[in-house]
Image (cartoon, rainbow over all chains, first blue to last red; front, side, top):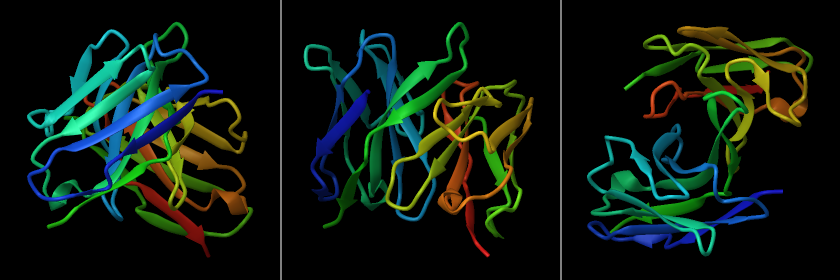
Length: 122
Length: 107
């Protein structure tokens, strides 16, 4: 059974760079897209971006100027960097696996990490 | 970006009730619509993909319908473990967007 384990710094100061990593265990790394999603306290979900095993990326335009998602296929890991953070970036950050239903392009996120709480405060 | 709205934003229901949540897209998204359940302090869980396909392991009391701009998630008989927040999400555009959520709590 595929599991995603994520980690990274939980407390940042304004202007620092957020850095999180998600490791994939128990399943294939190729053939999927790997996403980051965040959820500010008491609010809804915001998709940040995704990457596939070959490094092809797709970012939310609202964050694109500050986001870098990278992949390390040798470790079955992918990472998120978000630069110049402010208090508005305080959120729980989730990694997730994206997949298309067999024989279709109906895409969904079926496996999620447990989330990492990131707080930005001076 | 495609904007997603949900109604109601919250509802109170009793165990055994039939519950319907509506999701609307700002433009036609065919059947590129997924539903997730999230409990407090937990990651979202996929319930329905492609508008009406039940994810493996999800109880059959959950069902989804709709296409184009209007979609519904129905819980046929609400169970205690179903009290949670439900989100719709579109994958028609490569910029994925979620609805604001519908919180289902105990009446």
